[in-house]
Length: 410
Length: 104
Image 1 (cartoon, one colour):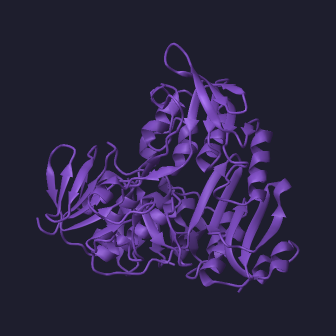
Image 2 (spheres, chains in turn blue, yellow; image 1 turned 30 degrees about the vertical axis):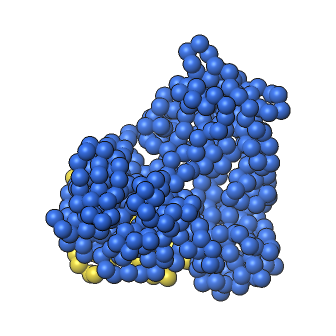
């Protein structure tokens, strides 16, 4: 089997990569290897609908089983890859089995960052400490969701805030502890952070910012009973969720001698430092349009970059021109974000945060770089196109709701 | 099971079996030549863009404002453009004929 393509990682990127390889005309066997025992599924609902409802696991499936069969994709699930022998082109699996490949794709994703606190072993082994990355994580957590229970969330990023909103809907008492002076500090501007803080407080979430975690109290059972903050306050807890970011899974790439720097380093064709190996999704560090390098943790990037990686392996390379976009759902708010706002010199607001319907536009010398839209799909859709086209937009028109949106750009 | 007619991006017509539940996007996502459906059906990405056969247009539910906003920005939009994630599948759509729109 000298023409076997192996894809390590069966998340959204790995799934798309395997199917994309077949679509791009790869004729040989395709093996999709996943560490989790489940066929590829969607992760975004895990902090939203799936956490709040008792919906079926199959509702998360990215494809029905028949789709893999039709495409001749072998799923190796519940299987870890321990090492890559690049010279021999062999993968060593956790089962001890070896698998030959002629080309290889890495879609290894990431894992939740863990807390760095004293007594971390005891904290990590507490039965009521949760991270949220997998469907099993979500099911363990939602089994504990019953009205009146006290949920403490460490980390005020998207995951933390989405879990907070889901927890409130389930009748929990929710506290969010954020280390930075504002929530969403890594991903958006202070105005949007303040908006979300206000929304969550109004919904009943106790949001505390600029809070460092000092230590934990434990029950005899080993479960955490309270979280102590550096300012001396203690927050009683029935369960604790940690959502403080993602560590890319780069260990096997690094051990195989591939270039790794905050992710597996790839070029615009998704090629790693070994041209026979591609990488895509959360684990990959890619060139950004502005000459910098970025790592994107999003479904959009997982799918778009996976398609580029598949085309490269199939010998039909295309350049990846990332036009990143993201979304988040909290309460009745749909946040849609397009572009990357880094480097903006002007912010324009259209609409009204008080009415929970607005868009923030980020401009650099008049050119639109990014947009955060809350319950504003028209603005999001237009911004996505303007960003792709590199449009210079009319800030005065954007800011004035009495003028049609279309008049602001090309 | 019910049957759909799907015309792929190369103009080839396929008879496709589908469950009479979920959304049309889910049925199309499963096809080898199917739709990307990046956002998973929350009407955010427009990557499940299709054209509904004009005979069928009166029989699919009307667009909501989010869907029309997304469609209005698509390069390949037509009068019969829809996002498949916004069309729930049910037995009345037996024989529905749709064409996959080109990737944007």
